[in-house]
Every structure is written in C-alpha cells, then in structure tokens.
Image (cartoon, rainbow, N blue to C red; front, side):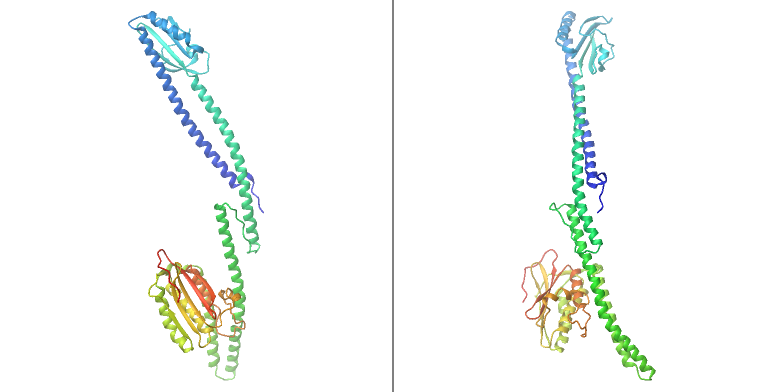
Length: 461
C-alpha cells in the first residue's frame, strides 16, 4: 500500500487552502471594519474641534479678549495629559493663553504630529486654527484613541491568525489522516482487484459523502468487470465446446468429399452438408457479434416511442402457423390499449421471437404457450409462458449466459444464445428479466419501465 506524505495529502492541502482563503477574507473584512471605525472617529474629532472653536469664538463676543483668555485657561486646566490643547496668540506670535508653550506654525490644519505642538507622544493630534478678531487661536485634540484602536486591531488580528492557523493545522492533519485511511482502503481493494480477485468490495463509511459515492461506483465497476471476465472465460470455454464438434464434422465432411472426388463419386451431398454446417457456425458467430453490439449500447440511438402491442401482434401472427404445425397452441392475451415504451422496435421483435422460438424448440407436441402483456406497477410487463418441462431453479441464471445449454451432449439443434440475446436486449432497454416456475413449465417475464405518466394497473390474465 502506497502512503502519501502529509503535505501532499489532498485533505491537508484542502484545509490549508481554506485556511489561506479565510485569512485573506478576514484581513479584507478587518481592514474594511477598521477603515469604517477610523473614519467615524476622525469625523467625530473634527466635529468636536469645530464645536469647540465655535464656542470660543462666541466667548470672544464683540471683542472681549479677557473673557476669551479666561475661557481658554479654564479649558486648559481641565485637560489632563494634554488630551486637548489650546493656544491663543496675537498676530505677533505672543502667547496670551493655553496649555502649550511651543508656538506652532499656522499651517497645521487637519492632522499633525505631537512634536509640532511641542508634545512628546507617539500619536498625532487633530488641529484647527483660525483668526478671532485681532488674535490667532489654535486648538487640537489627541488622536490617541485611534492609535490604540490600531494597536488593538493589529494585536487581535495577530492572535486570531495564530489561533486560526493552529486550528487549521490540527484540522488539516486530522482530515488528512482520515482521508488517507479511506483512500488506503480503496488502494488495498484496487490492488486486490489488479491481482485478479474480483470478489473484492471496498468498504464504505456511514457518511454518505462524495468518497462513499465514488467507492460505490468503484464497487459497481469491479462487479461489472468481474462479470465480464467471468463471461469471457465462460464464452471461451463454451466456444471451444460448441465449435469443436461442428468444425470436426466439417473437416470429416470435406475429407469425405475429397475421397469421393478422387474415386469419381459425386460429392454434392457432402458439399451440401458442409455448406449447412458452415452456415450454422456463421450463425453462431453472428449471434455473438449481435449480442456484443447490443451490449455496447450503440443501438440506443435508434430508440423511439414504440407500441409493444403492435410488435407482439405482428410476431405472434407470424409464428401462429409454426406452432400449429408443431401441434402446439399459441394464445395471445393483449389489453385493448397500453402506454408506449421507449425502445428499438427491431430488437423488441427479436426478443419476442427468441422467446417464442425457445418455446417452439423445447416444448413437446400438445404444449400450450401464452404470450401476454399488461400494465403492472408502473411497468409494461411482457410474459411468455408454457407448460413444458421448464428449467430447474439452479439452472435459470446459467441459461442466460452465452452458449450455455441444458442439453450437455449438444446433439440437439441450437447454439445456446437465444436467452442470452433476450437478456442483452432487456438490459439495453433497462428492463428486468426473470425466469419463473409456471407450474408446470417456464414463465419468462420482462418488465419494461414506463416513461413519465402511466396508466392504471391491470392484471395478467
């Protein structure tokens, strides 16, 4: 059994891929959320600055500089850690009031570094400047909350990434090992199949996921492959038995003809016998090729809506005389109307003909054969039954194989392909084929599935 390394495991790679995608999505979502929050904080600072500036302008009134100065001093005293800073200057740059000593330039509108205001801090300030009468006022508010937000966001993102990566690694390893165990079972099963053990079936889990679906498909393929190999083996054995005697007889006939020709005796009888034997051999190969063609499904291209009653009526009318000549009775039991089925009319005719030929060949004189059709449980049911000797229960599956014959001596006419062709045609049409006991005799039942929309069920009479 071949093992795949962890990093090359599809489960691990899938987990890592989703981890990377989740991290990217988280980064995009987090960046978007941070941008929105920061924008709102910036707008709030700017709004507060504007309101404070307007308030101080109103304190100046009609030129009361002393009231303005006292108001600024009062604001400066209640501002701790310089969260808010104020500076009132005259146009010469002289400080009149405020809580900073450094006189900033007059181009700090917006956001400026703390050092521009003479403050030692690693964050920035939102600044608003403007003239009030003959004076110049600078106010600013700390952007420390935004800096703290940045730190919190970065720290939270870092820890989230670490936790996510750890969970993803653990989950990836678990998923990889779980998938590796399941894939290992599939590998073991396929290796046994490659060694020729077609009875192998790969175990499935109770999850019902895509791997179980794939495993079921593999088991089905193994089953069909095993059946095909067994069928080929059986065909090879049966061909060797069925064609060895005809070819031996053909050779004897040809040698006899050669001897008679050398003696000046007419060889016409031998040539006729050789021709008949050759025709039987060719007919056997033609039947095998026809079954192979049907099993490939190529004939499905010719499927069309078909009235099965018309098919049965036509073929039973044709065989009626043959049954009468053989001293048998053929009864046809058909309903007045039945939904059409989708199929190949020629192949359906061949199916019914083979069933009637089978009854005609193997039933004794005086036998009664019934060909009937009915609608039953959303299926069109075709039944051909007789009261002959029937087929033993343990032989019913075997007679559906190619070239299998109940008569082991193979002295009676026939190639053992009639029911095999019936099964191939049934399978092509998606129909179920069953051989049942007619007590006495044999009942062959073929159930054709109906397309959408069927009629009410009627019984077989």
